[in-house]
Length: 77
Image 1 (cartoon, rainbow, N blue to C red):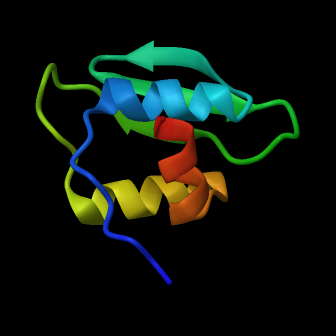
Image 2: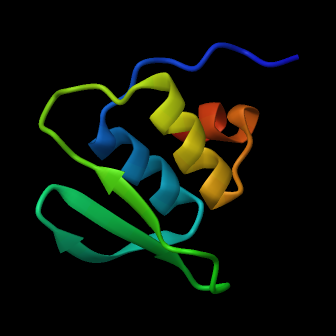
């Protein structure tokens, strides 16, 4: 069963992705481009201070990164 995703900032998403093995490859403006050692596609994560990411954008980031909602919730802890 899917649980509702919490409101998170770009910085929180980056920390969660780093726990899964992703690293910031480069930064252009407010977008941090994350890469993984297994050569997955780069995942851009916008960081706009304390603004939270929209639900659709967060789901798109997770889909591109290949991370399920449940795994993401574990990574946030």
